[in-house]
Length: 262
Image (cartoon, rainbow, N blue to C red; front, top):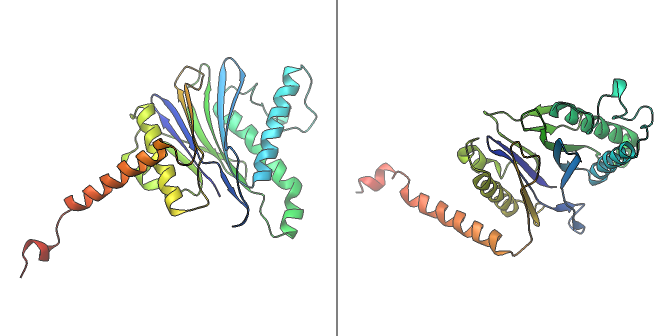
């Protein structure tokens, strides 16, 4: 399992992911779930992945292959999800973020379909989901969640954060505190808290935690941080958050029998 969260702000986008994969209690390993693509100067994409590791790696490999082929001036093979025509644009051709999301979704579905029969025989799932965010020059920055079926939803001002993987434990602080007027740094701190408390509740999520900040209209990753296990930023964040929760308990309303004891 894994946990990734993207937060859409007026100031830009924050991305946060863990790096743990789990294929059973005796096989836990580390893979980065955050990938940056800048196929041209007028566009930047950050892609985070969760689900079947083989599927996500295959999708990433196909995206990198397509970009390499395009840079060499070659044509993509017929039927490739980014070959143009009926298949639609790729990361170089997309004029809108939703077109880039459709492209990733088509690759994901193609990979899943290619191995569906053998995975089904083994009782395994090849499903994967992605968070894609970034900006194309002339368009607003944006964030979308791509489902295993290939379709996508966009983050909005009312629903500014998107999650994939083990999302339930880290959702409450985002719900209660998160809003689009946060600074990139404050949103990054909030996303790190979300990662840490998810790790506290589910051991299939864990460090290294990766955080990336993408300011609006700059088409670049301004900050990227990798926090490994035991780093003071992780421990200090958990200590401050825990202490704040303990202090809140003492400030909550008293029960009637506490206010008027016998």
